[in-house]
Amino acid sequence: MRPFIEDVGLNRDLLVQLLEDSYEVLTAADGAAGITLAEREHPDLIIMDLSLPVVDGWEATRRIKADPALRHIPIIALSSHAMRGDEEKARQAGCDDYLSKPLDEDLLFDKLRHLLGELPTP
Image (cartoon, rainbow, N blue to C red; front, side, top):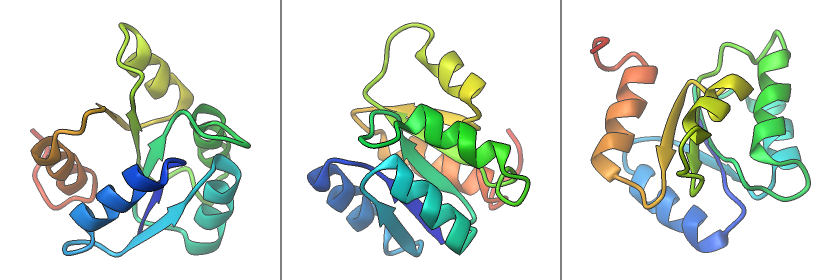
């Protein structure tokens, strides 16, 4: 299971269509719902938008990584935050990897395979 946490419905739908042939995808529309989903489902990986309502992706990541039962779950930040230093801030919040929008589909699949152990470490 790979939850995708994204507040914009169109972006969520597009990513689900992209991933659903290869992965089971669960979605949440805000950070609080994403945390609850992670607690309930214990997914293999999370793709986290950083600009979310209710609880933003930065804080949702910190909470997930602070939970001993969830901290092992890799989190890929997916965000329109593409300013210098944003990737470092995402990693400091606990994200294991980072992708900026617009999405590079090939790079996304490479990162998924790597974090899920489907590819050797580069």
